[in-house]
Structures are given as C-alpha cells and as structure tokens.
Length: 239
Image (cartoon, rainbow, N blue to C red; front, side, top):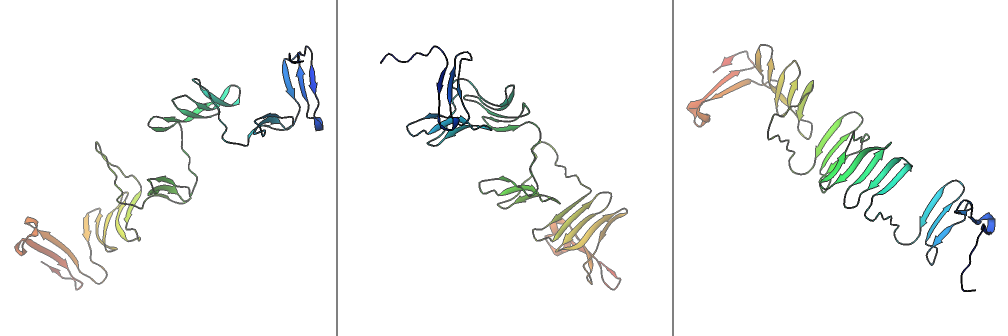
C-alpha cells in the first residue's frame, strides 16, 4: 500500500530448482539455499552464492575492490590465522601458518626465513634480466650478460672458499686453478706455465717448448734491465 511491507515472522521466497530464500526470525538471518544468488548491478554484474560445495564472489564487470578505509584488510584461511594483511599507507604482509614471511616496505621487500627457488629457475636482476642466478640441478651459476661483473667490498676482505677454485674464459679456456692443500696453477693460452708445489714453484713451457723466466729491473724499460733464464728442450739452462 505504499507504506512498505512488515513481516513479523519467518518469510519464504521459493525459487526454481529449490533456489529458495528464507528470512528466519529466530536466527535473525536471511538464509539463501544452495545456488540461490545475491545479485548486484543492472546486469547482475556482482554475484554472491554457495553451490553446495564452494562459496563464490563473482564479478563480471570492471574491477572488484575490497576497501578497509583507515583500517587493515585481513584475508584469513581460518578465523584466527592471517594469510594476507594489507595496511593503509603501509605494508602488504604474507603469512605461512600465521607466521609473517614476506612484507613490503618503503624501500622494497623484506623476507623472513628462506627464499626457495626451484632448479632451472632464474633470479633475474636488471632491466633486461642481465644478471642471473640459478641452479641447474648439478651446478650453481652467477651469469652476467651486460657490462662487467664487479665484486666489491669497501670495508673488509673478499673470501672465496672451496676445495678447488677454477677460473676459465667464457669459452672454457683455463686461466687459473686454486687447489685446497695443493697447488696454484696459472695458464697462458690454455697451457699451464706456472704452479706452486711443496718445495716452491715450477715454471714450465708448452709441449716441445722452452721454459722461460724473465727478470726485469727498472720496469724493463731498456734492454740492460732485462734478464732471462731459459731451460730448453735439449736439457740446457741458458742465461
């Protein structure tokens, strides 16, 4: 009659295929049967419903926004366990089993715990992914494709620790070997020419070539400053 409708008891709305709606006075609840939907918008663009197995919020037009105003937005896997927390003018936090594992900050991202990257998956740094770190199930790599790779420490010492450290050129040519409890080996054009041993050092020439040690005084800027020790392939030592 233009004054509205007042219902003082339960109210039932019966839909097709048992998609019913009930106002249950005693529960103080508006109850939707399975597959009965709440629809918003002229074309029912936003829908909320339960299909008997899962609950859905379905948006068909534009974006779906969740606003917290001046308060946090919480997404929880269960009532007392945070999964995602969005803080106004602040961080976004990701949790595992209610433990904070990753959060954004004004300077970037903070990670609490381990960062696990599967085999053959790169960590890429630079606009073109110029620096890559990865593991291929057998070996680990630091690969740079642009400019120089610079390892810099401005306050202390840089340590490389391994049972053996090899330096090679990009095409696999040997440059130097550093062997734990053993020799330091230096190469020229992929030929070993210098190595340390338990008594001192050894200088050797290539296959069928002479072994030579050059001694230069005064930066070797004239011939009088230059001396050479040479072991030739005939068994002679020449100065």
